[in-house]
Length: 404
Image (cartoon, rainbow, N blue to C red):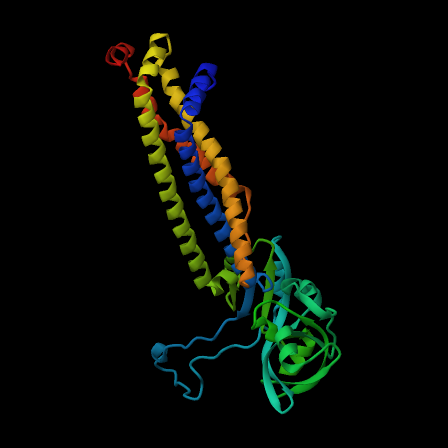
């Protein structure tokens, strides 16, 4: 039935005979598909942009010391409690960090991993103190985590004993350039003169208040023999949570977190956004389906005399029903193609308009975002033709011709 030339010929003739009606249906489908494609592409691009700004130049997995928790006073009645000892102590260092690095590095999804020393400090210049973040890393493994080579805006990505890299915010606010020296006073009270070898821009304001130096230099400045944490980058960011959870089962003395654990509000917002988009798309497709079913139902009534004559001439019930199924399929196919093109045009226009106002959004043009609304529209349109198809199949040629 589906490949019957007779069915396709009659279906095309019915569509071409009612050009205005056909055009309106196709336009309705095209508008629905364009809205779907536009929402998928725009929200997908927005999600990619937000995630890139959040973790594009940041670690995906963090290993930090496990904090010492308070113990109940009455746990051991015979024990005399020392009131001078704090109930809660924040551990500062990881001393034997190699097993954690080796465990995570064994995972093929880990692109780069490095032990780090994190701390705070002040740059003293012109009688003022400017608060900064300090991070000691292994350059070979740490630079890929922050994509330093891609983010350099001046100088070269190189750190040694006294040379460091500084963020754009530090350079702008203090007027520092490549080759300049400055005095860094750490939160521990120690300090030293450092030389700027390069300036980077990681995008986020807080990330650009960062000073990168060698791990050994940071350990000496902060008086540490271990490290304050371990950071890693994953080739597939959304796999970070499962990798962190798997590693956490092996180690109890450290806390292993993913970027998802530290950005739950962002992920919740993205899920809510996706849910709203899905609801809108569902309502659009329901409207399209009901509209097509209604219009083709009217067509079946209008063409009842012609259908009765066709059945009297030998057309089977399956062929008569197939005429409307083919019409629904063709309407969905044509409307789907036009809808994708219209949605792409809408997306490009929207991004260009927002770019002029200083806000940049990208479009996620993926095979899924293209094929999903197109296939859904075609399937829904074909299914919508089921009601008039059954109605046409039940027509009695004798009664139609007698009452015609």
